[in-house]
Image (cartoon, rainbow, N blue to C red; front, top):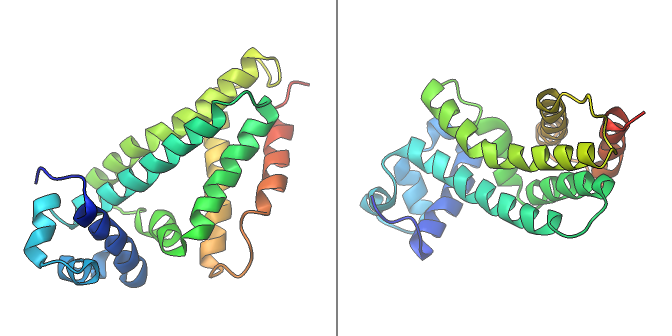
Length: 195
């Protein structure tokens, strides 16, 4: 189980997203994922320990890629009020472009298994760190209130974005997601700004 890169690894990750979105995590046998990826069942175990490892790995890959792209975009000399909007837009764009991934992240990653939830939360820390960096910068610049409770602000920001996407998934993506970024950003900024 040493391999974590390469074309077959990517094929399995992409197949897992599709199969889990279509069948739900509990009804997605490893054999279905292998069939979708075009590999033998045993090949899966060269890359992953079990189905749980596949789910965590696909989240690590997709979230890791998103966090890296976001860091690059946010590193530019952009006004703080634009940084939060950029992050929201990127989040919504990624999931609007891949409805299967949206189903997996919004519904299937919400498992009751404590060990699985703990591992998912570990992966999520990189994303939450992006929000923290925006909040810290905004507080240092005096754009956000110095008394802002960063932990609660982070939860509100992440929760708001997450709920907007979950609602979109539950409504079977009947409307465009990305245009919601502007009003979501305005609402969040109005609560964070220095008065």
